[in-house]
Length: 523
Image 1 (tube, rainbow, N blue to C red):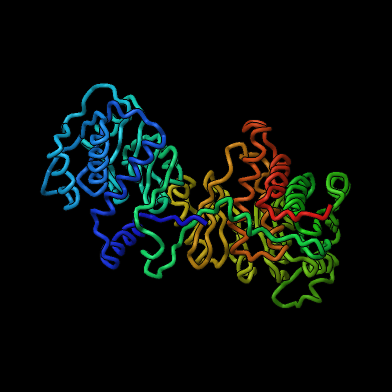
Image 2: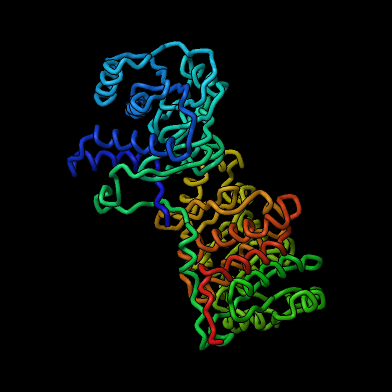
């Protein structure tokens, strides 16, 4: 897992490195500048005419050091800087004296000419207010300049915490950041301003946390090695049972997508618990699945109530079937295609009350939760919820735009308050655990904005959990695998033509590679 940091955590690591380990701040600044210069050389960027825009904080000091390295290498460099010594950091004052003695041109007015390379070092990760006045004019003008655009640490005007644009932001082709990726570089719209992101080591590492644990992570391809191992001496019972409780009349597709995805992800057996009108089509679509169907007549007027035990609750037949299937399962998918009318609420409540294994709630189960928040209390801390932004809005009473702007904090607060794993789905899906850890997913693409993709995700999660993976590990890894599946199939389908069934095929393509724990047989 790749460690991510917000602005406060990065400042703490920087402070600890300087004060606890006695690493001089100027050394860190020099290493940052060398990292930027190294990337410029590695990419073969044209340095014949370079503009470096610097602020008065340490980000500006980094920029001044980069300008000096470029000047020493023979580049034509101009520094854009409104120098006010009393407002500059001590390190930036030092760097300014160096560039002054080297005679590097400094201007306070944006030169109206063409450049081959424009470097942004105006503001660092500490920016917390909207960019206005002269600096906004500078950023707008820098964006209009010709030439390759490079941001140091983070594009100026972008929040290091949530990726929001603070009035105006620098649009970079490349961002060279230091020590760790900042969360704001991975979240929209910040990631659109960052361009390519490269992390450079400047001497700040996990020691700089002083035994404090990071809270944010991003799964990487190497994490696929943690997928459940498939040993040669095994059978279908070895890899667990997934129960999919989904699909009302004319909604069999949701049950199919979840069940098929669970099977393709590796679980041994899938049972679909669905309305009897779906039997024939599911037998044709997915003959590998076990079917347990119910009729509306079976539902009757029974069900679990505070005054009746499980044995009595099963007297109407439906509850008997449901409880038997739940005892069989190692993981449960609950909600896709169930609807919210009539008996759906009873199905969700009874399933959560009876289940003693992890339950993944999606779609209509979430809509029912929004109507009756007490439903979730029946899950006993063994639940994963997978809302998209609209569903998250109904659960929290917040507007979609507000959630998108604060997706990490809102997902984390919900997970903690309700003792669930919250997977808040967006272009950058956030998985939040109750104890505070969270994960930002970087796989996937816009082609996955298609009907049934969420049902596929629930199946992937259930498939991993049924094979013995802990919920806390399966949730972020399942989201990552789901996104990789969409990436694997995109070359074939494109972003316009991708379907949920294509994503299922993408799962096969990802897991049959060397990272997917495929065991070699004896030939």
